[in-house]
Length: 213
Image (cartoon, rainbow, N blue to C red; front, side, top):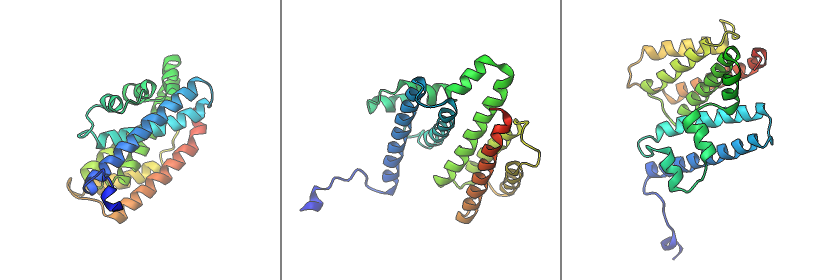
């Protein structure tokens, strides 16, 4: 009797993943709205706000990119679910960088270069790690993300030439360049790449105080 009362939201694994991604997107937008309001009301510090905002923006970019065929308009998605999150949509869709980075852009043209580059780098790190979690293992999916990350790292003058992230990325990009576009990383390779990205990201974050952010 009970089994007849169950309501299934999905018919197969692919449909289930789609609904799970919808739920995650909804959660990211809601979390960003709360974060924006907390920052405006001085409930959290600029440093805490920027770190959290960068993560949310990077997660949003990865997820919205993977959902672009099913959700062509994020604004329409928010409207459909009556989200009322104008601040989040402005931050995630229109701006794409934390408010603190925008403020530094307005106040200092020289200091902004570093701040914007750090923001870009952080987003590229998280986007690359997120893509692996979403099982995006094809060379033509992974290679552009690593190339973008390498380019953004090269913009940061405070990182030494032998910075571990640069070295690891160079090795991975060289390895991927020898593979075909349709080839895929094995689970073991993807796990190692994620580990290398995570350790490089931690080293990058540890170096930030020296950059005077």
